[in-house]
Image 1 (spheres, rainbow, N blue to C red):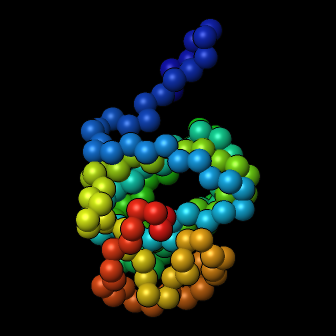
Image 2 (image 1 turned 135 degrees about the horizontal axis):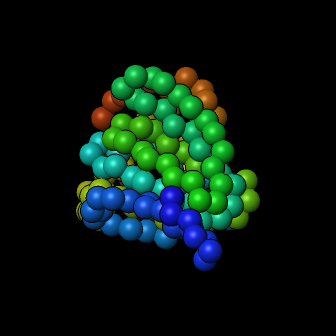
Length: 139
């Protein structure tokens, strides 16, 4: 972090990304609840409070935490990630690959609840099986 009398700045990303998206989500909504097979995704929280749950589909490791303004979260391939907004929230999503509208790298486990419904993200999930890609609007 660089700090002076004007304030501070820090490097959010030091490598190229293929797509950058701005996201606004109302309080008490769910986004994500999917994983990517190839894409890395870096989130930078602009405002709000978000409960984030991540499960590695390779190791089974699970974590849930809260993220707020100024925090960054890196999602790697095969990490199921779900965002639950506690307040209205804004963030930037930077993807390592551009989203192909005909074959997006968004996948959901067969038992995962749709992102627009309240689902128990901490329930036991089945082992990884091939799924159909999701539409970008499903996220």
